[in-house]
Length: 232
Image 1: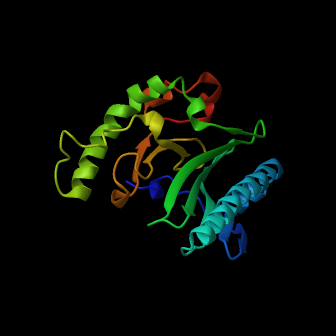
Image 2: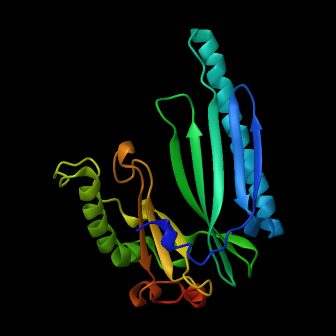
Image 3: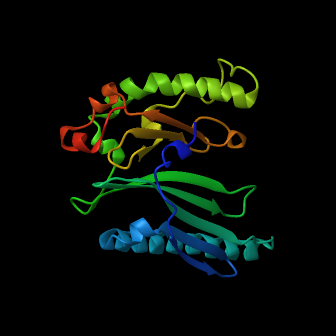
Protein backbone atom coordinates (compact mmCIF):
# COMPACT_ATOMS: atom_id res chain seq x y z
CA UNK A 1 0.00 0.00 0.00
CA UNK A 2 1.64 3.23 -1.10
CA UNK A 3 1.26 6.90 -0.36
CA UNK A 4 -1.23 7.34 -3.19
CA UNK A 5 -3.89 6.19 -0.72
CA UNK A 6 -3.16 9.23 1.38
CA UNK A 7 -3.48 11.70 -1.45
CA UNK A 8 -6.61 10.57 -3.28
CA UNK A 9 -8.54 13.70 -2.36
CA UNK A 10 -5.80 16.20 -3.24
CA UNK A 11 -6.21 18.03 -6.57
CA UNK A 12 -3.29 18.79 -8.85
CA UNK A 13 -1.59 22.06 -7.86
CA UNK A 14 0.97 24.36 -9.39
CA UNK A 15 4.35 24.41 -7.74
CA UNK A 16 7.22 26.79 -7.14
CA UNK A 17 10.66 25.67 -8.29
CA UNK A 18 13.91 27.41 -7.47
CA UNK A 19 16.90 25.90 -9.26
CA UNK A 20 20.56 26.82 -9.68
CA UNK A 21 23.41 25.00 -11.34
CA UNK A 22 27.14 25.54 -10.98
CA UNK A 23 30.21 23.51 -11.81
CA UNK A 24 30.06 21.95 -8.36
CA UNK A 25 26.34 21.73 -7.53
CA UNK A 26 23.03 21.08 -9.28
CA UNK A 27 20.42 22.38 -6.82
CA UNK A 28 16.64 22.57 -6.85
CA UNK A 29 13.93 23.24 -4.28
CA UNK A 30 10.26 22.68 -5.01
CA UNK A 31 7.07 23.30 -3.05
CA UNK A 32 3.36 23.35 -3.92
CA UNK A 33 1.00 26.30 -4.32
CA UNK A 34 -0.86 25.25 -1.17
CA UNK A 35 2.29 26.04 0.83
CA UNK A 36 3.14 29.20 -1.11
CA UNK A 37 -0.23 30.71 -0.24
CA UNK A 38 0.60 30.67 3.50
CA UNK A 39 2.98 33.57 4.08
CA UNK A 40 4.73 32.36 7.28
CA UNK A 41 5.13 28.89 5.83
CA UNK A 42 6.48 30.36 2.61
CA UNK A 43 9.06 32.26 4.63
CA UNK A 44 10.05 29.09 6.49
CA UNK A 45 10.46 27.26 3.18
CA UNK A 46 12.66 30.06 1.84
CA UNK A 47 14.88 29.81 4.92
CA UNK A 48 14.96 26.02 4.66
CA UNK A 49 15.97 26.33 1.00
CA UNK A 50 18.80 28.70 1.90
CA UNK A 51 20.06 26.37 4.63
CA UNK A 52 20.01 23.33 2.36
CA UNK A 53 21.75 25.11 -0.50
CA UNK A 54 24.41 26.60 1.78
CA UNK A 55 25.26 23.22 3.31
CA UNK A 56 25.24 21.41 -0.04
CA UNK A 57 27.39 24.10 -1.70
CA UNK A 58 29.97 23.91 1.09
CA UNK A 59 30.19 20.12 0.90
CA UNK A 60 30.54 20.26 -2.91
CA UNK A 61 33.21 22.97 -2.79
CA UNK A 62 35.19 21.07 -0.14
CA UNK A 63 34.94 17.88 -2.18
CA UNK A 64 36.18 19.66 -5.30
CA UNK A 65 39.21 21.03 -3.44
CA UNK A 66 40.05 17.59 -2.06
CA UNK A 67 39.69 16.08 -5.52
CA UNK A 68 42.10 18.64 -6.93
CA UNK A 69 44.61 17.95 -4.17
CA UNK A 70 44.39 14.22 -4.70
CA UNK A 71 44.37 14.50 -8.49
CA UNK A 72 41.23 12.40 -8.89
CA UNK A 73 38.01 13.21 -10.77
CA UNK A 74 35.38 15.41 -9.21
CA UNK A 75 31.72 14.58 -9.82
CA UNK A 76 29.19 17.38 -9.63
CA UNK A 77 26.95 17.10 -6.56
CA UNK A 78 23.16 17.09 -6.62
CA UNK A 79 20.81 18.39 -3.93
CA UNK A 80 17.06 18.42 -4.42
CA UNK A 81 14.23 18.84 -1.95
CA UNK A 82 10.63 18.56 -3.08
CA UNK A 83 7.59 19.12 -0.89
CA UNK A 84 4.28 17.57 -1.96
CA UNK A 85 0.80 17.86 -0.53
CA UNK A 86 -0.37 14.75 1.28
CA UNK A 87 -3.64 16.37 2.27
CA UNK A 88 -5.18 19.65 3.38
CA UNK A 89 -8.02 19.87 5.89
CA UNK A 90 -9.68 23.00 7.27
CA UNK A 91 -7.07 23.14 10.03
CA UNK A 92 -3.98 21.31 8.74
CA UNK A 93 -1.76 21.29 5.67
CA UNK A 94 0.19 18.03 5.56
CA UNK A 95 3.25 17.85 3.32
CA UNK A 96 5.83 15.18 2.59
CA UNK A 97 9.37 16.25 1.82
CA UNK A 98 11.74 14.17 -0.27
CA UNK A 99 15.40 15.14 -0.25
CA UNK A 100 17.86 13.62 -2.72
CA UNK A 101 21.59 14.08 -2.27
CA UNK A 102 24.40 12.86 -4.50
CA UNK A 103 27.92 13.61 -3.31
CA UNK A 104 29.97 11.64 -5.78
CA UNK A 105 29.65 8.13 -4.39
CA UNK A 106 28.24 4.97 -5.93
CA UNK A 107 24.70 6.30 -5.72
CA UNK A 108 22.66 9.09 -4.23
CA UNK A 109 20.53 8.88 -1.11
CA UNK A 110 16.93 9.89 -0.53
CA UNK A 111 15.36 10.92 2.78
CA UNK A 112 11.73 11.61 3.64
CA UNK A 113 10.32 13.96 6.26
CA UNK A 114 6.89 15.32 7.20
CA UNK A 115 5.81 18.92 7.50
CA UNK A 116 2.46 19.67 9.13
CA UNK A 117 1.28 23.26 9.24
CA UNK A 118 -1.39 24.23 11.76
CA UNK A 119 -3.37 27.03 10.15
CA UNK A 120 -5.13 27.86 13.43
CA UNK A 121 -1.89 28.79 15.22
CA UNK A 122 0.33 29.54 12.19
CA UNK A 123 3.07 27.11 13.19
CA UNK A 124 4.68 23.84 12.21
CA UNK A 125 3.75 20.77 14.23
CA UNK A 126 5.61 17.50 14.58
CA UNK A 127 2.99 14.84 13.74
CA UNK A 128 4.39 12.61 16.50
CA UNK A 129 3.65 15.34 19.02
CA UNK A 130 -0.04 14.93 18.25
CA UNK A 131 0.00 11.53 19.95
CA UNK A 132 0.38 10.67 23.62
CA UNK A 133 3.85 9.14 23.35
CA UNK A 134 6.20 7.02 21.25
CA UNK A 135 5.31 4.07 23.46
CA UNK A 136 1.61 4.53 22.77
CA UNK A 137 2.22 4.74 19.01
CA UNK A 138 4.33 1.59 19.17
CA UNK A 139 1.63 -0.24 21.10
CA UNK A 140 -1.12 0.64 18.63
CA UNK A 141 0.78 0.69 15.32
CA UNK A 142 3.84 -1.50 15.94
CA UNK A 143 2.35 -5.02 15.64
CA UNK A 144 0.54 -4.31 12.38
CA UNK A 145 3.57 -2.51 10.95
CA UNK A 146 5.95 -5.39 11.73
CA UNK A 147 3.56 -8.01 10.35
CA UNK A 148 3.08 -6.03 7.14
CA UNK A 149 6.84 -5.40 6.79
CA UNK A 150 7.61 -9.10 7.22
CA UNK A 151 5.28 -10.01 4.37
CA UNK A 152 6.46 -7.16 2.14
CA UNK A 153 10.13 -8.00 2.63
CA UNK A 154 9.34 -11.63 1.84
CA UNK A 155 7.60 -10.52 -1.35
CA UNK A 156 10.49 -8.28 -2.44
CA UNK A 157 13.29 -10.65 -1.50
CA UNK A 158 11.57 -13.81 -2.68
CA UNK A 159 12.31 -15.66 0.55
CA UNK A 160 11.79 -15.49 4.29
CA UNK A 161 14.33 -13.15 5.95
CA UNK A 162 16.56 -15.20 8.23
CA UNK A 163 16.77 -14.98 11.99
CA UNK A 164 20.16 -13.33 11.64
CA UNK A 165 18.80 -10.61 9.36
CA UNK A 166 20.68 -7.37 9.99
CA UNK A 167 17.46 -5.41 9.52
CA UNK A 168 15.01 -6.30 12.29
CA UNK A 169 11.63 -4.59 12.28
CA UNK A 170 12.29 -0.94 13.14
CA UNK A 171 10.11 0.68 15.81
CA UNK A 172 7.54 3.26 14.81
CA UNK A 173 9.80 5.91 16.34
CA UNK A 174 12.30 5.26 13.52
CA UNK A 175 9.71 5.78 10.78
CA UNK A 176 8.52 8.84 8.91
CA UNK A 177 4.91 9.53 9.91
CA UNK A 178 2.63 11.31 7.44
CA UNK A 179 -0.89 12.53 8.10
CA UNK A 180 -3.44 11.92 5.34
CA UNK A 181 -7.13 12.16 4.63
CA UNK A 182 -9.63 10.61 2.23
CA UNK A 183 -12.18 13.43 2.47
CA UNK A 184 -10.08 16.54 3.30
CA UNK A 185 -12.23 17.15 6.36
CA UNK A 186 -10.20 15.31 9.00
CA UNK A 187 -7.07 13.17 9.31
CA UNK A 188 -8.23 9.58 8.81
CA UNK A 189 -5.10 7.99 7.32
CA UNK A 190 -1.55 7.58 8.63
CA UNK A 191 1.43 6.83 6.44
CA UNK A 192 4.34 4.88 7.94
CA UNK A 193 7.51 4.99 5.85
CA UNK A 194 10.83 3.29 6.49
CA UNK A 195 13.46 5.20 4.53
CA UNK A 196 16.57 3.80 2.90
CA UNK A 197 18.52 1.46 5.19
CA UNK A 198 15.90 1.75 7.97
CA UNK A 199 14.20 -1.61 7.26
CA UNK A 200 16.31 -3.11 4.50
CA UNK A 201 19.24 -2.71 2.13
CA UNK A 202 19.57 0.14 -0.36
CA UNK A 203 18.43 -2.18 -3.14
CA UNK A 204 15.15 -2.87 -1.32
CA UNK A 205 14.18 0.79 -1.40
CA UNK A 206 11.74 2.35 1.02
CA UNK A 207 8.84 0.61 2.70
CA UNK A 208 5.56 2.56 2.73
CA UNK A 209 2.46 1.43 4.60
CA UNK A 210 -0.84 3.29 4.91
CA UNK A 211 -3.26 2.54 7.74
CA UNK A 212 -6.64 4.01 8.69
CA UNK A 213 -7.16 5.99 11.87
CA UNK A 214 -8.89 3.37 14.00
CA UNK A 215 -10.70 4.02 17.29
CA UNK A 216 -7.63 2.64 19.08
CA UNK A 217 -5.37 5.11 17.28
CA UNK A 218 -7.77 7.99 17.81
CA UNK A 219 -7.74 7.20 21.53
CA UNK A 220 -4.01 8.04 21.77
CA UNK A 221 -4.32 11.36 19.92
CA UNK A 222 -3.76 14.18 22.37
CA UNK A 223 -7.02 15.90 23.40
CA UNK A 224 -6.05 19.22 21.82
CA UNK A 225 -5.73 17.54 18.41
CA UNK A 226 -8.56 15.03 18.55
CA UNK A 227 -11.04 17.19 16.63
CA UNK A 228 -8.61 17.28 13.70
CA UNK A 229 -8.78 13.46 13.39
CA UNK A 230 -11.57 11.00 12.56
CA UNK A 231 -11.70 7.25 12.94
CA UNK A 232 -12.63 5.10 9.94
